Image (cartoon, rainbow, N blue to C red; front, side):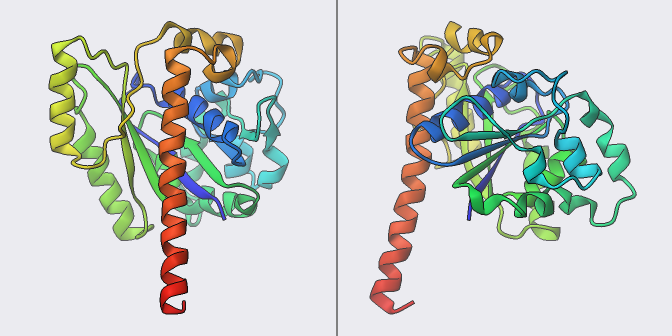
Length: 269
């Protein structure tokens, strides 16, 4: 069964889609089967994998609103071990369509359940809002990653995000937990960056990834070529950072699996 992770921050411009595209590619490159579900109406994860939003026949909108089976929507990408559920502007009207639907908060969870066993990881690229689509993603996820830009307003709105997660945990998904906080657009030479890191550590103690994503020209260029940065320029600092992040996440999961297996062997589970 897949580990399902939402990449979420209602603040735009924090590197959310950059992380969705490049983390999924890096986790796939490490040998894991990965599904990236683009549930952002902007569809930037879709184009980040070189898929034309104008040419796709079925999208996450069809899966959520028209009950199209998820396996009919999945597209195999040109990159190792990564499939994608694409998105386009049609999804912008989904929240109005969902408003009167039964079990509207679980539409994505139910759709993904049909195919999650085919993957080791499922990532959701969420829209920059706390509306029904993000609610669906968090209800369907076991955990979530929060990218935070190293700039003055880094923590703006995060208390609202965490309050939303607590409500979802109480009402819809008691198992969801914070996977980690990812510092993006990091420049260690700046005093402001160090101040932001200090504040984030206060807000999220023991939850910050050891790797931070640097400001990097190659990271900015890669989407225009329809490639994750590890394929566009594997030797770049951006590629190295996302590979290290993928290793950090998958190692933690492997360690947890090993610990659970050892406990079962010890106590007879």
